[in-house]
Length: 112
Length: 118
Image 1 (cartoon, rainbow over the protein chains, first blue to last red):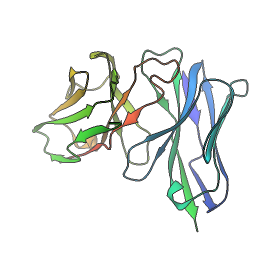
Image 2: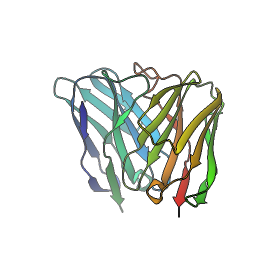
Image 3: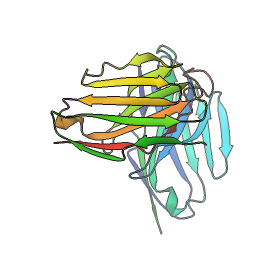
Image 4: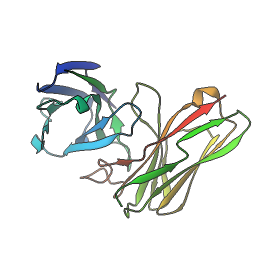
């Protein structure tokens, strides 16, 4: 089986850098994804790591290390609009077609 | 068109009602999903359709009945629901359901249908 662990909440000021960790215990997976969800909104895809290493998309970067069973999402130059929930997710090797497993989510609160 | 459109946005129904949620995408995606989300929780997978065939049913009670009339449309028929079924129901699509690469890992979600069962 698989279990994804994320911190429940992170608070930071505008302009700061926030790192959201996602540690996992899983029998194997194809890759690690990250989604953002604002209150009352739909989840939005942010990034996907199929291989170990860093993926950068503007102010957001995502990292995966399979040997350390660990990944993170890095939010740089925080803006008020970045206040949202962030979910990591994996497609387990042992499960069938189309089954994305989400972590419990991290609430990011950005203060002025 | 890069959107997934869900209707209605809000739905209130009694336990004896029959209603349907609708979802539409025109991105040429061949996998479509229904997720259920409770407040402050992650989305929970309910059903997956791949190439218009039901490929995953996550042991969802039969009072929820999915239907995929064609590759662009996905419905969720609701009957005899319970108050605990009140939640945000999210539809999503992806290029295909492949767990490899960006198939099932890159989902485009609709804005959701917020369901209240009285």
